[in-house]
Image (tube, rainbow, N blue to C red; front, side):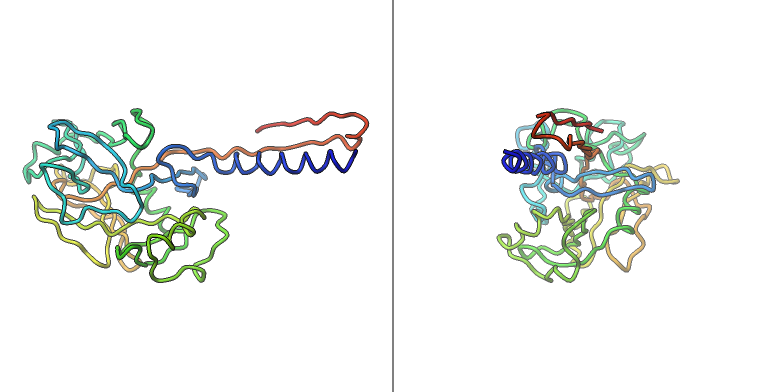
Length: 273
């Protein structure tokens, strides 16, 4: 009888621990990443942000996979994934090819204000990292440049990852990448940059917006993701850069106290903290 109790308890606890360690929901990746010295954690969206404008209105979504980018297919009559900085003057969220000030002036209006159709479809679920959070993330997690499905980028290993950089190849097919991604590994593709309607793909560098203004009124702070390049840079807000949203998370820890006389008492006490 006692052995049966222990077997049932062990199976139940295995499912409980998995559920609490990996509370994944729509649009989330499973990896957890510390982004500041206080230990704050985020999970990343399944892919870069996109905006479909073909119907004359903005519909927001995440790319289907981490390695999916539009590149030279950014088209202001259909869909884009390279945005100007999201100043609030006209609340365009950077969906503009205008090189002037009007579409980008003012304080920041977070892209996470929008409902993401495949990311919960509810406003305010996601947000943009600050420049300091990007810096902490990039400087405190193991990283490596590689190619997935013939798209260049950089991977970052999540907290408590069972993989090391030695386990990571230099190139993956889309199919082979699935097993690595399941371990929580983050891939940030080099999605290119845009000036007006002209897109330039940089093979060795990824440029992403932060939520921070810069000292210059018409500049904002972006990050350049490359092991040999300074991360935070001040650049014109009209520059088209990629956006990768995050969600703040708190991993649930479960403390369990089991009565040593379980066979006789038949009681188990759980404290969830």
